[in-house]
View 1 (tube, rainbow, N blue to C red):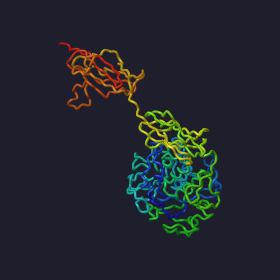
View 2 (cartoon, one colour):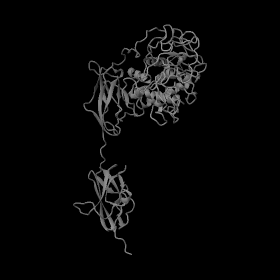
View 3 (cartoon, rainbow, N blue to C red):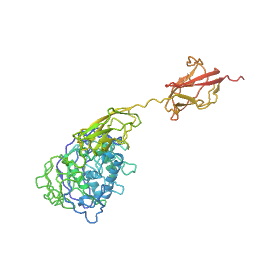
View 4 (cartoon, rainbow, N blue to C red):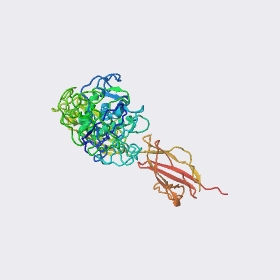
Length: 615
């Protein structure tokens, strides 16, 4: 994984939200320690860890203010409530209307398909702030497409990874190297593997039939899909950290995103598109300022590090004490103290009080909260002695189940428990998802929803874990068995009409139709063998004269050669089978056609061949 670079470049706040910004490239690589489990087939596997999705690019490092004044006059705000924009907050809490709608729509869509992920839209907002400043302050059209392309630096190996062109310039307009694109900064190979029909994280978030990384609805849904991959539950701190680190493998990035996430959870308000606050600081490559030919712009006095206009910290060196985010000195449009990168607020809204001076935390993960509410399980115990099993395509007879216990072996009620399926199976929980979270009942039992087997046979293991990893995870074995071969205990003709033909001629098309049944029900998919046999009642063997079939698969030179035994015939969904056309040779008489199945069902059909009329 490419290193995260520390030198900061400063720029002036633009007069309009559509001012050009040089943006950081997206990161979406596999998080360290993440499991190999995928969230249903809807998601592709993350790329190899040695291929950073962002090419080692930087990101905006602005931090939210500690104080939270009321929104500016004229801002559009809504009532408070879970998942709703609120009227409380600094100007930084103003989210452009279309961008805000895209985040909420993406979270709602994923909640419907993967409710166990519990993706909050504020997390998408936090990442969107860091990656592109909320699409340049909401510089998008009515459909959510950016008014101007948002492109990251050229990934040419100078300060960033070297990624040669994978999309023929389709998304980034660069025919030599890739660049990160769009509000959530995907590189082309990550979005669609270099083509409109390739595999990747690309998604259609606005239902227009296209997957466009420059559209905030599409980009937000794609980012949410990645964050939820691998069966993650984003209410679990470890899964949340892994998801963000997978987006950008940097502890500073993790702290920055968590800070914005907590800030947005404490209150947001809607502002018109194009009027969002533009970020100022960004972490960029230490090897130079290759930003694809675009300049960063000049920093305005009073913004940035606080030093004199025209000066910035020396490349590759950290700022001196007193530089950077001083108390009482913030970035446009308002003043206010900002969080230190080491003290992100918690996702639940707790953390340093506004205006406080809590010392920086040494690690990115917030300090665990003291236990509240129901007791947390110390152990998960499997219920049932045998592994689960089902026939391919059928439901498992028993649902996966565990019991949560405390340290004294007593049941723990109300504890969230996560059931996660591995990539090795196409079995699915309801809603076609691979991971679900349920709460234990008063007896401490956590029972997963009904599990349905797919077509893939074989054994797999279901991982069961407690929220916040308070108890060791356990595994439940499961096996998908092949479907049994279709059976038929009876064969019968569908017509009682006598079958006749003249020697040297053929019987009528589809003259013989049969129906296979098993215990009185139509038997679909039953293999039937048809043989022209002798009339010996004791030992019927294949006849060497009389009616015959032709093999359509035979070479042209032998396609008319008589075939008196046909295999590979199969009944349809209604148990019906029409035999191929039957021909006759020069021999008149009564002949027998014998139809058999592997289960011993037998049907004998008489074929009468008349001598040709004398002229």
